[in-house]
Image (cartoon, rainbow, N blue to C red; front, side, top):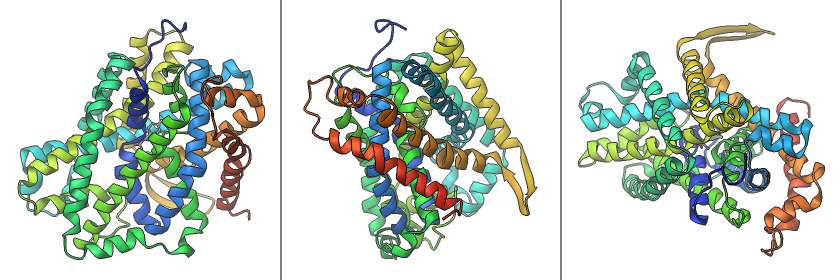
Length: 448
Ligand code: PFF
């Protein structure tokens, strides 16, 4: 596609906002607290922070470089640089499909909670919040809200990248920060909140060095920054040529970190105050947050405001992995943008139906697992396999396969910027990031 025909995001701020819009979403607000809750709290936070700097930012920069240089969808981008490496693009398409198979479902939960907060039913019910969540999951409403969410995403994507994505991101991001900060202040006054801070901020170093914690934290870093699956390649293909990629990647990563830490500072004090379990799993925030709101004056209003923002944050993320697939079908199969969008949305509905309707038992190699659903499989496979593998190969590609000048030119905008961080970035991309990912893959397989 010619440069002229291809849309691009407005200014510098727009690029940061849309990329941060993709990054910040359920990953930081829903997934991060539940993973931290299951993996030792503060130990997990510590390793996650490290992974964002050592793995997340370098890989994001590499993806930005590939995307802006080639101005194509993920598969086209890698193929145009080196034909065999198009497989790295397909890895991204696979990742986007897996995430589509469950992310819309969780986004649908948020939509349901938005509606039940606004109508007041969430707080007028007699049952506990745990019971209410289970009842919702067992009702057909779950499917309806999932499909509604895919439809919402579809409508924004149909309007085009620039109008749809840019506008949505500009409005919701500042509002999200404000409400998270208000909530963090509010929970500080709940009884027993101190236990929560201890859990979230006082690391147990033994736990931090366990292979499982590092493995999960690397996965979380990839997932929350939307890297390792071509999403940032696709988005950077719409960046302008004078964008400072280093500055953009740091801003995106820091904003994402801030939201995740704020989410932890809201959730954990509330968990301990309400006598709940931090290792509750996927339902954690949907059970904990109503506990915070219920004793506040105008509970419905606060709760609805929060879930509006969570829904919007999820929407700017669903748009981004929808766009990975839409751009791929549009450019690789010569489908019109409209038809590519329809195909992507149709596939998303199909995958979510699979996840919601099909549970099975798994008995193989002495492993007996009951009532498995695609929810966990898609989640695990995308965050812990597809994205880290994509990240590893991205490092090898840009730092070993491409000429040294490729990254330098992109980081410095062909000499217009100083690019002081370049030597450190090159060293990290060549050695540190790939070795860390390989080591943790091997260690997690129990080979060392
Ligand atoms: N980073 C998003 C979140 O944290 O919610 C999830 C995500 C979006 C992952 C887009 C991957 C992606 F391509």
